[in-house]
Amino acid sequence: MKNPLIIKHAQKLLCPTDFHGGFGQLDIIEDGAVVCRKDIIVWVGKTSDIPPDYENENCQVINASNKLVAPGFVDCHTHPIFSGTREHEFVMRCQGKSYREIAEAGGGIRYSVRMLRTASEEELLIDAIPRLNRFLSTGTTTIEAKSGYGLSIDNEIKMLRVIRKLNEIHPIDIVPTFLGAHELPDEYRDRRRDYIDLVIHEMIPMVAEEKLAVFCDVFCEDHVFTVNESEEILQAALNAGLKIKIHADQLTSSHGAAMAASLGAVSADHLDYSDSNTVEQLKQHGVIPVLLPGAVFFLGLSHYANARSMIDSQLPVAIATDFNPGSCTIQSMPLIASISCIYMHMTPTETWIASTINAAKSVCLEQKIGSLSVNKQADIIIWDIPNENFMPYSFGNTSIDNVVKNGDLLKT
Ligand SMILES: [Zn+2]
Image 1 (cartoon, rainbow, N blue to C red):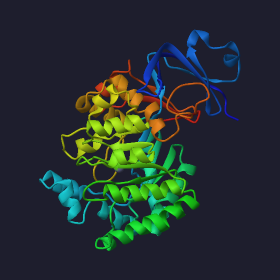
Image 2 (tube, rainbow, N blue to C red; image 1 turned 90 degrees about the vertical axis):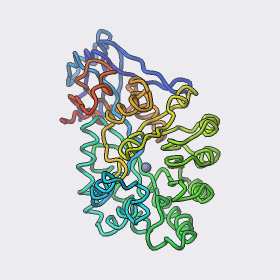
Image 3 (tube, helix red, strand yellow; image 1 turned 180 degrees about the horizontal axis):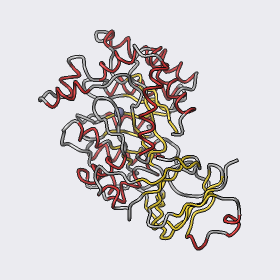
Image 4 (spheres, rainbow, N blue to C red; image 1 turned 180 degrees about the vertical axis):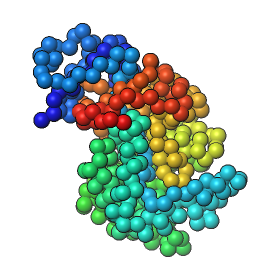
């Protein structure tokens, strides 16, 4: 039986809240306190108002004076299951080759596919654990994790089983997404229709049947899957009972995000080249834009998503790492927050909202996580920083004192 946990005297307690379905807002309680029982938050307020019955119990008390207390980050777009790393491609990029040139020469995602196919479930699991630990150590308590390096029935199922197993054995929570349409595998380069049929008629039904994923995602881009192909795949996923997401407008502007919006996508991700018409479509259909500025930064590109116009249109913008072995090795949400401020002109306050409550919405978990409020899961970060602006300002430094995950105090 877990003892109740009281965190009190927080210099600032950050409470991101949903605001009429718009961007959201950040309420701040000074000298704040949170009370948790088992894995749930049962009370939030000023330290002087803590009901006396809570403190009379046999509780664990943390004095958070001079600390900032915030909900754990929700990293709502990651690719953390892979075998082997791609630093050789990084060297090629340093020498002037583009990511696309590397991909067209058989590198990129297809390299990761070849590597993953040779790895066992056990090996993939062992490789992933330090990555999950790294997420937790930088304040992330929930991630969304995609398949997409298998690109065959057996290998996609293998990845999703590894994600399921990790969710059971590791404190971090994982939302699984099926991304069979991440790339065309080598053996289908000349038979793209056959691969799309395989995804639609065999992979999606099996993933849905075994309940291995909540979402289905597609990489919709010129050189990968067209808007029409993406639509067909996402429609099949909806018919099978999966929710949908899309990778769109990362390198060029297409109708992909707008198409996904009209189908009822929960989120549209990347959006670096989205135009005002797409922004309007997202707004009209209540789609959450998930922006991934770490990938733009890591690829040495300069065209970031227009976060300002989306926020000013009251879209509930979320930010995430896009952690993967090729186009973004960043796992730290504080670093993504810094990049969002510097290159997308978001304010520090906006980055907190975008990486907590809005990110939770983009994985349909806003009732459970993403804020410090009563009845939510006790996923809480105690920061050794003086105020909310300090987190993205202190570029590359993460000063976390303690992580509380499901009401358990984890030593970081
Ligand atoms: Zn991605």
